[in-house]
Length: 222
Image 1 (cartoon, rainbow, N blue to C red):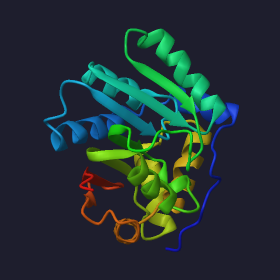
Image 2 (cartoon, rainbow, N blue to C red):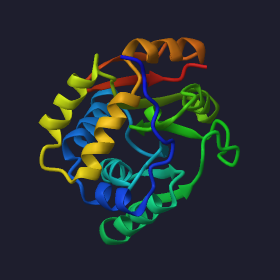
Image 3 (cartoon, one colour):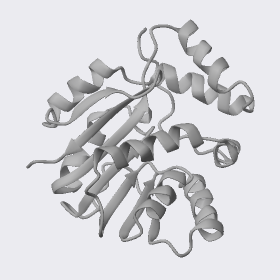
């Protein structure tokens, strides 16, 4: 199925309210578990950036799991960031987390300043996917841990609708519509591997971690 792009910025009041209230525990737990399994030596302290942090759930999860780390959540949506900051005030004020407004590529972010770079469900919003991979190369310190996860585009619209019906049957219409549109806008695993090759990140490994998610993980070696 040919990719069908969706709007780069999903930041309406209805969308952000629905995302903030939705239960993404399964996929977000998968992400944090995959990071822990992939980088068991990430203890102590460091600087981590969450690119496309949305309402902040993964940034806060990572801050709890790695309390010695300084974590920055970056997002282009002002409403998403407002939800993230509200969540931080109610759940995580003791954690070292900062939420920052930014749009990739963001030259205000210090080059080679991050020991870990994470991103969940950002890539399918980007009209030029290489923007994410080039940003990761620019921002990462040598040896930095990288974990990116996103939806994988199904073979057809019927398969996409079946995933929506299975995983989002009880969600409000705005989330069901966004999920369906995101599946159609997602990149396939082969497309992601081609992006990694073009951006000089072919050493990172890529694979499937669920029936609807691919991952990219590894360390920046140069």
